[in-house]
Length: 230
Image 1 (cartoon, rainbow, N blue to C red):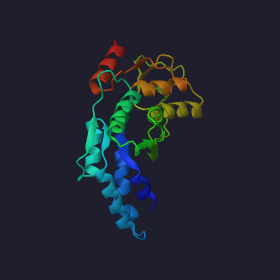
Image 2 (spheres, rainbow, N blue to C red):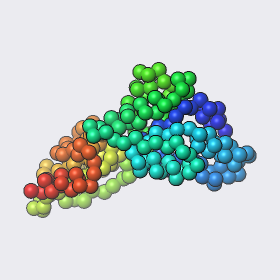
Image 3 (spheres, rainbow, N blue to C red):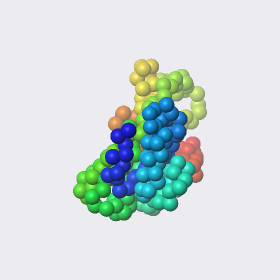
Image 4 (cartoon, helix red, strand yellow):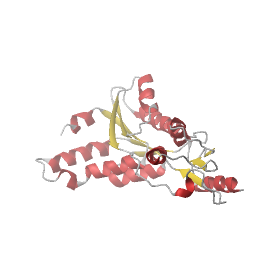
């Protein structure tokens, strides 16, 4: 019930992931406020305010997800990843810059973030003297996994084993499984990180990555795996 005064201060919204759009859809679903006194009226007011705000999204797929949540909005912009933007931090910078440039100076940027926050947006807002409202709307967690024995210790099966890590939380899950089992990966295992952000997390966890995709895509991943298998 405190959201409307907060939203009145907002000049634009930055969304850098589809997880944030899914979280927004869940928060605005009629069943979410069902049973609360004035819940439906409050939801309508929030939707009306959000519909009037410009959204700046990382890529067309994220923008499409926001449009599905706010179908009446005509101000949802997809910020295309520049050719030289090789990681999430660089892409987020372009999203935030586009949003800040569109806003009245007295307004704040609303950043719908996850638990693995992109520090570049708060830093950029600070350097531009732009007020920032950061709202954590989703959390990335590592799902407990059990690693097959063929990937551990001194096991040898004559096969080329490649492990692809698709996210920082994936790296966390792998590290957790290794620590809990008291095991190490086989020395001939090849770790591939889907992008620089995941590779940085692997380095923090002392996981040695052999290959990092500069621009994540299915063709690039396939070519990387083929190269490792030669």
